[in-house]
Image (cartoon, rainbow, N blue to C red; front, side):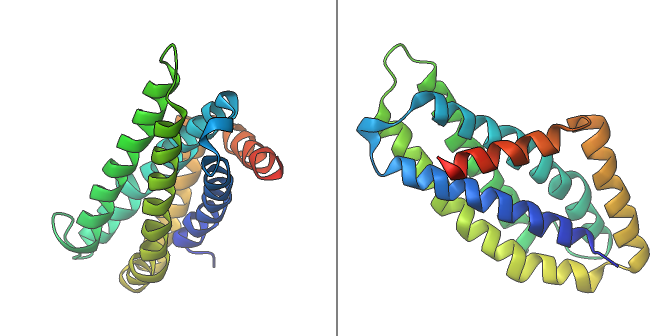
Length: 175
């Protein structure tokens, strides 16, 4: 049986590919393609945050909390804090893109810092938090979470949107 955490790990792989593209672009701030950065920011805001982080924060973390892992201290508290830090970087990128003369160096800095933050964050989730989740959660919990993840995709994100973001990730990687 596939665990709910397997779905999240797969999403992490897609996110990591987009981070590779963002870091590659950020190496040359003066040549940043702002339309491409806008696509990266859209992916990060909607796929990484609205879809992926929502599954963690609204579904996985509360399930772990019900099984005894506190959310106000320890690993979950760290993950929540890092989600907020990441959102701040993405917001800063989007605000800079809205400026009449966007500061490419500032955008590149936020891309690099966000990528660095999220790489460490994903590593902690994959190697620590999800291992804990798989130990804490019952098979029934896992089934319930998997069904809830599918509901999020269908009802909150929208039919086909997940696939559109996978396609966008592939486009960003290839160019």
